[in-house]
Length: 360
Image 1 (tube, one colour):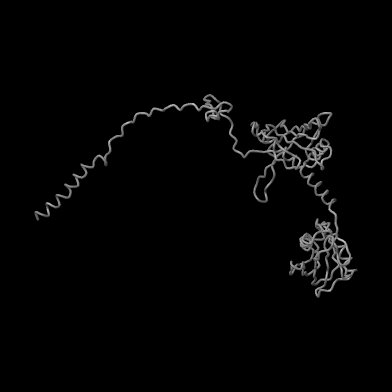
Image 2 (cartoon, rainbow, N blue to C red; image 1 turned 180 degrees about the vertical axis):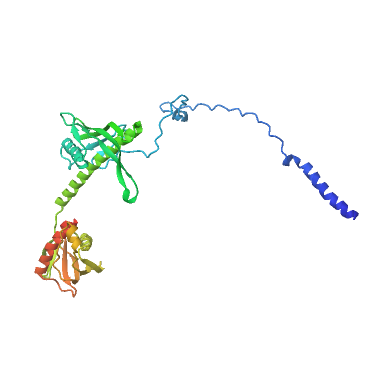
């Protein structure tokens, strides 16, 4: 009993002693303040003669402005002038809603071209545009409305929210090959309240209207580009005979180009490519006359091109010619079509080539 008591007493006693010895680590004293480290000045960098010293970081510091007024914060994404037309550009650090156009092969005389686009834009969007000077460089719009969709499901409606009037100014360079188009907000009003637009919101209205005008110019330009491309495309596909005296079609395109263009021709024209052999430049096709339903004939404006082939399987074999490629049309058994069949088929394929802008 006595030994047990001594052991039990010795354990807590030894624990107290150990805590007392290590007390400095368990209960640290308050850390005394350390003396400030003296900053040693750095010697100024000596720049050799003839060289320029690098800019110091302090030169980029923003100076304090304790009494500066609180400026407006724009919470919307920034509005940018979009140079959608190929001959348009926006100058860096431009402060106004302005874009520059350069004369190109599609514009002709640039200033009359832009004047016409401005007036046509007003007609399409039903916006009144009035010329305000004798030279035709300044135009003023009527009220341009902006609508928002309100309501739910079948009860949705477009409600007019605000109106704006703009000034459109054409700014030609002295040589007239470069013309700037600038838009300025003249007047704005909200339909439901008398709130005034902020300076940032005014700029957004100007840029938004200018982008719509530039989109009009880009659309007209794209039509002109496609028209000129179609006019310049020369269809070389004709009829002739191969070395064996069999009827064939001849194109000025290379063998590989003709192969790729025929793949485009077969699509959506009643031909299904069942198999092909690129090593022998051979297509194995099935032709089925496209079905034209009542609704297709009623709503579709596209002309249906009749291919003079009976439904069934065919082979098309390409071979290299002295100039271009020979295209041989054969039936399912490999027999070459007659000259009359090839001639009639050629006339239909030319129409398909023009319609699909295919180069053959």
